Image 1 (cartoon, rainbow, N blue to C red):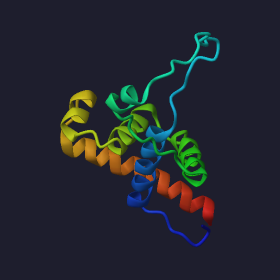
Image 2 (cartoon, rainbow, N blue to C red):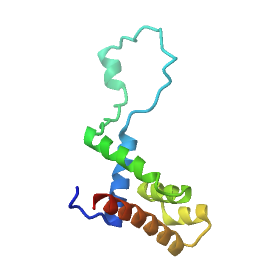
Image 3 (cartoon, rainbow, N blue to C red):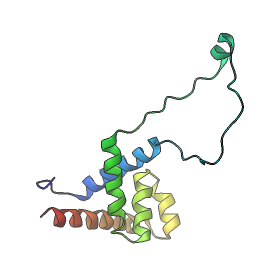
Amino acid sequence: MADHIWTADDVADHFEEAFRTLRKLPPVKVQAYFNAWPQIVRSEKEILAMEPEPMRVRPSTAAITRLEQTFDWVLWLDEDERRLIWWRAARRPWKEITYELGVDRSTAWRQHKLALTKIAARLNAAAA
């Protein structure tokens, strides 16, 4: 990656992938609780009548590594910039974002681009 020059769009794509990877991770469960009841044995008829469970796709190890990289990048930003980048990575509409931040759309867009450019500049400086 030493010859790769980062742009704001590359960083935004990286954050969108990180958000999708986070959504694919299994939910966190409390370790202290467990079930002592025996498993229910179902007949074939009951199994066929059940609703199909959605297929859960697990993220690859490379995607998790890239996710961890983005967690390091987030530390370079202020709290408002972090929220703004994650909201846009989650494809949250600009109207909701502007309401939360209390600014107009062009100001929110400008702050978003500035935060992405800040990360890209830091990555390019580290690669040089």
